[in-house]
Length: 263
Length: 158
Image (cartoon, rainbow over all chains, first blue to last red; front, top):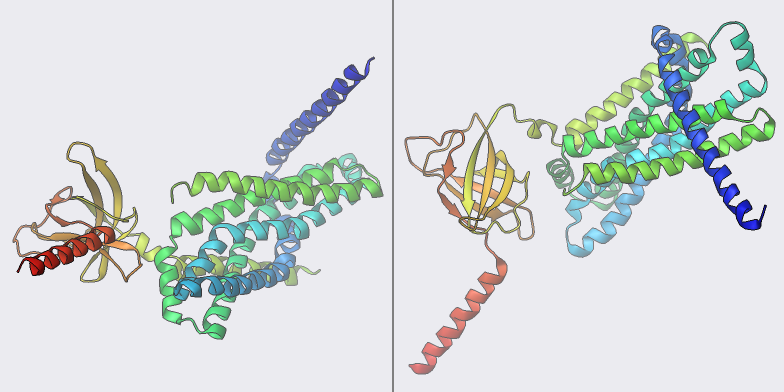
């Protein structure tokens, strides 16, 4: 085989591998959805996952949201006061958080805090053959292990994004109104007049829900598909964080171009 | 971790999550204002709408009574056709005057309605006939300059 033929066969093999993996992820997703009924019949399973991915991510989400809001307040004020419109600080902070920063940054944080731990847990279960053992006991690991973790992530994500946004707006208020002294009435009134519930808040929540599905699916799939060794699990965790981050940013662009066209 | 503690924490998480959404809906955005319960539409034609935007406010006596629903250019009359969505608890007389105003010097533009004295009200789908266009700053300045120039000429001929 000549070097040219070898070059093309490397491309071919890579393409086939990627497409096969995508197809496998698709079948995995469908099989998991089919097995999801048990998750909602036994809320105990879901509760544990809501705790693991929701409650345990609370601190990092709230603290990061607060700091993002504080920085937005400082930087926004610095620019706006040059044009003598520092009262518009409320709009700037609220719109950027509600539309973009809330869902995206909360999603990135959730991928690295919640998604990675889901992948690690499932990968380790696979490496120690717990998933195989479940299969032997006629317990479907998709229903017992995978689906609850997926739904826990999907349900937590919009709530975490809303909390991030609220914490950020509080941070912006703290810097703008309390420390710098922007008029409090103007801050809230301008914000309310320019932030639309359906176009801004609801679209932000839809975004975060879509990110939640993407992150949770990537996390459980990478865990389930990991090579059952110490190195394989660590690679799967890395892939979860990297793929989730890319997926969030790419999906954000697609969703934004549909939602905020001409606004 | 024991069941009760976990229940408590998940409960707290879900509760503050929904509280945050409620905060975004009520305090941050105009949830109550955007959800006008029942509305009716009327149209108005303007020669020039300036910087008026869809979803801009319609005010009467400074109170928001509706929103701009749609702005179209009419190729027959070369005018802008603006559709206003008004709260149905407010009715306006037929000779109501609609003008495009600016809030503050650089603020957003809105439509101001000055009620007339007609007995009959504008029905749903009706049209406001008396309108005043937006003030375009360039036109105003050039008018002012022309006036000054012609004044100067008058002085010169006298």
